[in-house]
Structures are given as structure tokens and as C-alpha cells.
Amino acid sequence: MPGQLLQGLRWPQSPTDGECRAAEELLGSLDRRTLSAYFRQIVDDDRLLLAVASRSSVHANGFVKVVLERGEHCALRLHFWAPESPAGTDTDENIHDHIWSFASRILLGRLTDERFVKQSNGQEAREFDYVRKAETAARRGDLDFQEVVRLASVAELTHREDDVYSLDPEVLHRANCSGGKEFGTTLAITGRIRKPRAKVYALKGELVREDPDENLVTPDKVAEILRMVAEKI
Image (cartoon, rainbow, N blue to C red):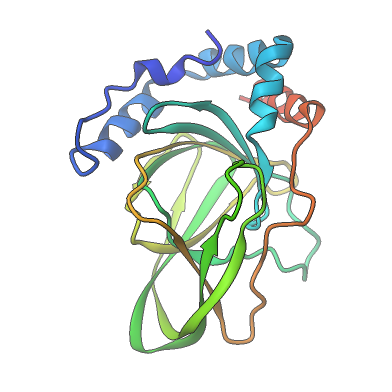
């Protein structure tokens, strides 16, 4: 049933006690036929579609964030990347961490995931606090400059279709889900909020990406995305 996938989540009492493991298990257990039917049912239910659109937005890092469900301490999100931009277009995400841990499953495309650490001999980078000054989840956040730090790239991972991975809040990374000439899509479960603000970084010589001024997503756009994903999976 639409709006009820998170009911299958065996969520631990403590935020450090296996949240990622529980989320990974649920994401891995969902077969593609079930997910396709789930997306179609949301599209066909005007009330659900409106609710999903009201909490969804265009993210600074280049994808559409469709918040399918919200639980007491968690949320189920579909991240949708449009087909690759023309050669030479800047499509890199900001380097960032998160306010919660999360688990993610690659539904369509391939996700590259570069990890960073603060290191004295790393590249110079500007550090920002990501501050959301409105309660509405779809409102844009602001970037408040903090200081200049140095970051070193320590790993570059590749996640392919149906891979499931997880990340703790303090891990710095940037990721992009590419479907080549098609679109890329991930399904993620976020956990309890573990800190008040996320950090965003821009390496020297790189522009920092900000939330677009108009980042709301219409019900029609959500329906279009869910139909496309339902057909492909």
C-alpha cells in the first residue's frame, strides 16, 4: 500500500544501535515489482500525490528529492537525477556531510561516491553551515561561511543497480547517480537527526552549489518522475 513501506522497518530504539542495518535490510527486501506498483499507486491517488509533492524539492546537488513517506524518526526518499548534462557542464555535488545516518539503494544508473577527510596537507576548501531558516522541508536552505579548511580525497566508490550502502552523519562525501543518456535514481531511508546542521564544502577554485530560488516540485512533476521510474524498474 502506498505510504506504508516504512511500516516494515524494524527501527532500533537507539540512534547508534543498528539504524543503518535495519534500513539496509528493508531496502534490500523490496522487489522491483512491488516498488513499481507502489510508485504507480501514489500517482493514482490525488491526496497522496499532493502530500508527497508538498514535502519534495529540487536539491542544490542537482537531483530532485521526492519525500515519499515520513515516520517518527525516519523518512523514505526517492532521489532523481536527470540524464547527464552536456560535456563541460559542472555537475559535481558539493562535498558535504549529513545530520542523520542513511541507507540507500541504487534503483537505476550507477552512483559514484567520493569520500573526504580533513587533513593538514589536503586541498584548501571553504566550509559552510547549511542552515534551514524555515520549518517547511521544501524551503531552500542558506549557506553560512565558517572557515577555510583542508580536505583530502581518500576513496572513490562505485555503487551499481540494486547495491545498498549506508553512511554515518560525520562522513564527508560527494556523489552523483548517472544513468548516462537515461536518468539515475536512488531510494534512501534517513534516520534520527543526530546534529543541528550539516556542513558543506567547496574546494578552492570550485563554486559552491546552492538551493535554487524556486525549488518547489509540483504534483505533476512528481507524478512524471514516479511514472518514469515505475516503467524502468
